[in-house]
Image 1 (cartoon, helix red, strand yellow):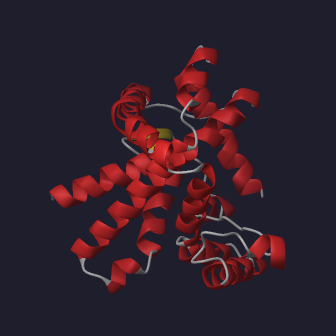
Image 2 (image 1 turned 135 degrees about the horizontal axis):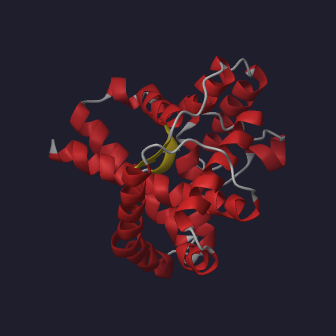
Length: 237
């Protein structure tokens, strides 16, 4: 049980660290999106919890990491970790009938793994013109007509909706490591990769919350609006 809780916390830190930058950037430019928030009390509490986790756990670790890891190396680590998510992206392109996108994801994985040192170096797009096609199961559900549902801030994971929370669970289940390794091995590997992604993403955005808090009267609302705008744009694309 403790291992499962730890894995959940690490995965949550990944989601918060990796996604808050585009969420915030779009919130600054977007008009307020219409979204149901019937669980605002719970969501506000989880939002505060996530900010505290960032303040006392993720940001200090990321700051130390940033002092020893050059920026280009950080970007390489980010590309390597993204390369590992090929199965989920490939599957969701297929689910949505985007076969060219599925082909590009498979091609990108092959090229970047073989020629790009397991994905640390981006070779597929600049050399072969193979662009990313980042689809997830939340987008797949939207493609088949599922609405957002109520807004939901997940502890450790950050902003979401009921639809995207379901999508997150399905994407996690799609990972082939779930069926090839023991539960303990899966938890250990996912936990390690999750922590690495969280720290690496946060290290490249150390001033993120400081800038947001200075310019936002309602940080909770700004993040909510930005998240919904980003997801709507992802579905349209």
